[in-house]
Image (cartoon, rainbow, N blue to C red; front, side, top):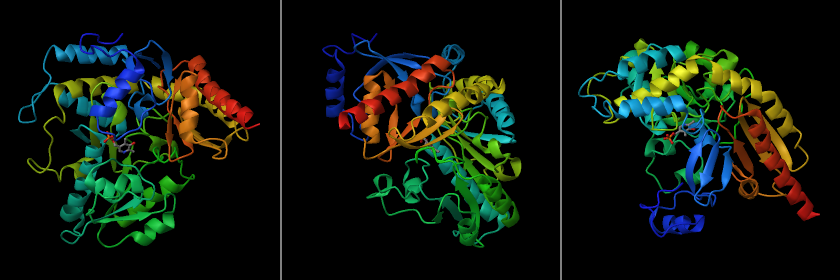
Length: 415
Ligand SMILES: *Cc1c(COP(=O)(O)O)cnc(C)c1O
């Protein structure tokens, strides 16, 4: 189970929680479960309790924990070469970039590590494209973003967040961004200036509670970007790579963005791997020395990322998300009026608004954990479910049942 020699004097969940509280910065407030091992859709804590993982690392674990083919790719690569730096070539980068580019329908890929780095890369790419190709005024490039976005945690990215928790006390903020209501095409159009270079959006807002824009919004943005010569940047870090039943969430409405940011599941739940994908006319504004990363495109990351692309190229995981969606949706919708106010589902991704009079999202997650299911609340009264796409129909049913039982228990307690 747990690594006994490294963890002398620690045995219960509470022992580990106390230690973490003491020495690990308090930038999260996790549920009181200490995971020691995991496989597929299941995790086991240090006391031997089993839980179904209904968060899947915010979609970083789309293929489940320790998918055998991904683990094999990582192990094989560990025995060959792990890090080269981009000062030299490595034999994994080309094949990875070729196949990822093909998977998402673009010419080229720029590999990074974390999602935030991919978004930063896309911002730099759009600004530089603006100066070099579109011809906007020096240092005046402007990007339109959506209210309630989540694109990561760097100082520039939190500069255009409107979540006070993410943003407050981190100023001075990076200029050059205008935020408009998500789903409001007219507001985007009104915000365009001669210096606007891009519209940056999540095709579905994950952190905001799986907010799905109304039909026609994404095609409308696409059209506007084409008409006004702007880059449409789709942040598919959470929505992409199978989660919604298609490789990219944009595909649902047949939309092709100019630039995609990818991350989370791209690392197969093993290592951080992120990427920006775009066509040559955009990507080639980046020249040697103008952007980079010590770890980006390292052989281990490329080997794992390549194995992820191979899993997705079969279409099997996208298909599975599509097949499991109807029953998932039906069961969740049956909870409306029984402690749930609204549910939003696409593929194996759900945002569930709990009636705040009954309980908070955090309380609901605690109740689910007691019933053997790990889920995550977001923004007060919303729970997000994003189980591994490899989950069995029975285990998926058990996840929703745990929510149903939690709500029923809370309603009974209220009388
Ligand atoms: C998680 C996420 C990011 C940031 O990814 P990190 O790897 O945590 O830096 C960016 N955009 C979206 C849409 C995300 O969900």
